[in-house]
Length: 254
Image 1 (tube, one colour):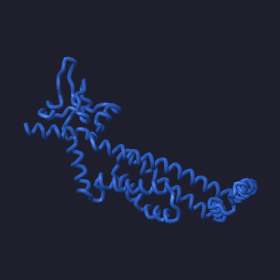
Image 2 (image 1 turned 90 degrees about the horizontal axis):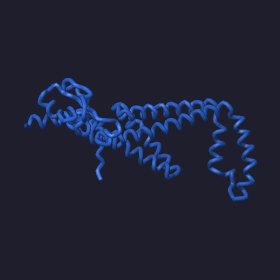
Image 3 (image 1 turned 135 degrees about the horizontal axis):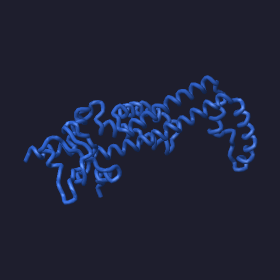
Image 4 (image 1 turned 120 degrees about the vertical axis):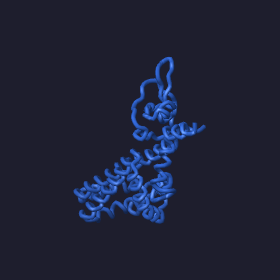
């Protein structure tokens, strides 16, 4: 069953009504009932009892997202949530790296002590901790200079900032955020492909697929970089979906 995005949104956020100055258009959006006057919602098209929420020239009427635009907004907010979670996680990793750089020797000693304690336990289960890839990676980190670790923490924070800025912009459907998301995500795709050549995992594959789909979806549906007519075609499509535009054209045909 197809989802009625207009009524679904109105059920959550309420209706949007407007009384235009144009008498021909005004009469198509207005009605009188035994309970009082009614106005058509600019989103779902249903008549709503009560005075309009706004009035004035038709050109100043709010451009209310409808139909496919609402569906696209849901997708953008899913991507915004995913990037916000990723950004917060990267911030935590950056803080951990920074704290590790300040107490590297103490953490190294503590790690070696725990390794000596758990080594016999893992040997009982025929697992050699001394040749474990995870343990090897951690031991390599202890060999890094403090300046290198601070640089890594700074780069991680910069990356997290980009992710959080993307999240905020995508949540509010800002066009600059859509460009930023496509450019930043596409720039990291080669690195993600390279990581798969080093080690394949379901998480890495899922992340790569999600990022490729996000780049294609945003670039095509939002007509970025001149695709499918660019910004002009995108704005015309939004205006053509407006209820006021529909009613204006219908009134002109009468």
